[in-house]
Length: 250
Image (cartoon, rainbow, N blue to C red; front, side, top):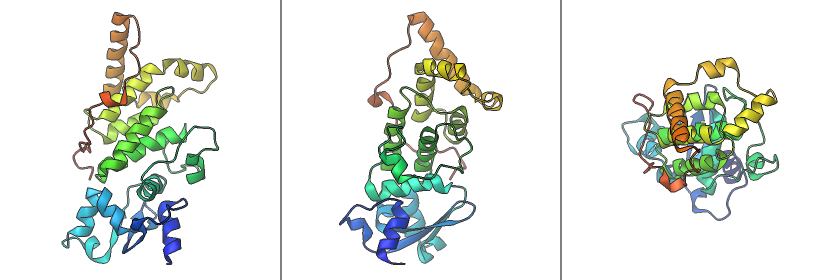
């Protein structure tokens, strides 16, 4: 594989010119149940992910010797987001117009996702969980910032909320944000129901009890204070880049 082919496959978008990450050894990352292959330069993987530093830096693991890392249970559509960020050190902009950087970077729908309601909002939650799993602090931070921007006026689908609760601990900053978003964007939820864009009964039934409890508590506070509190600033969330993966998730 030539260097140009490697750049394109790894980043899934036009690469940043004259970037030092395009030099040196590449790693074969096999993603998903069908083992989609990504040829990614080792340098940015080592710099941005503690998981890859361990997998590639410890000779006890075969992955460090043959430079092949398998992520069988990660969806390629989500790994695409990480690969893009890895080579650009930013996420594509998303203005939900259908003609923004996000759609140009990821032209194909996220067909592997369990829920297709608002793909970008669903995908950013999955990407945040991936960032936490592979211990990529910078990627995780940007996913959270993007989610904070996305969810202010419209939260994600219920299936995405359930996915977050299944894969992150109850102390996660992302779960706080999802509760905040659900309560803050309640008007949009009502509009969706009025236009038959509501959630399925199955998705409603699967919502985590802890999520429902926290939403109820927030509404109780709103009744007492006679108003929904203002949208919380990004800095108010105590993430501290702590790794949040549930035990056994690695």
